[in-house]
Length: 107
Image (cartoon, rainbow, N blue to C red):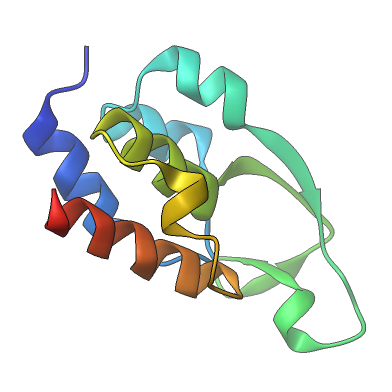
């Protein structure tokens, strides 16, 4: 079971545009059920550098992991935030994470 304080710490580590490896999620104590639900295989895009996935500073075609924006949503829900309402007026993944953090702070 995830403790509230641990969830708050994990939420502060989310930035919105990163992929966390499954092993990192396990190291950080994210519940296995969440990892299974959120983990997926993501593919790099090649139209711009922003779409590429990097692993150890090298571009990769695919990466299996958890998007930290999805993890932030799950953590915020766990902490009692209505994530749909908290993120309804924001655009972009980093803005979503900021809005979720703000909503948690207001609880």
